[in-house]
Image (tube, rainbow, N blue to C red):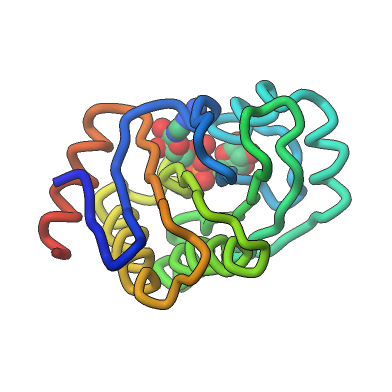
Length: 177
Ligand code: AR6
């Protein structure tokens, strides 16, 4: 299963690179607390956006696990980047609540700004060590729970970097449906 629809809102699972989501208004960065470039998704996003993104984002830091802030997208093909600080697994406790907060806060920002489409990476599942199966369940459950209350957001895309992560998300979505 790679799609779930509730009313006018779609959730889709996609294999790909978060920096190449041309049709999405906002993309989410799995950031560090100081909103510096860093590695992983953050490194890829900052490389594609150019140095002006870090200049803008750094002024908004530091942020705490679960928090989200918004900037422009600079040289990326999107309009906005929403930077979320995911929890470090087993260090930032309770990690499931803090991870859910990331998805909720990012969607709340979209609703406030009138953003219609948002692409998320699998926050915390790289350097921050969150097991991908557990993270997928938190992410999809949180998004699905929020979908009925969304008024502006119409498309939510999880962009998974590898085949295995896509499969995990497909299985999890099937289970939650
Ligand atoms: N597009 C989509 N997904 C990607 C991409 C990409 N271009 N590149 C990696 N992933 P991570 P975290 C996947 O480590 O765990 C950074 O250094 C990757 O396979 O980027 O939240 C920051 O500065 C993994 O599944 O984020 C922070 O310090 C997922 O994205 C720290 O890492 C998240 O991996 C944040 O760690």
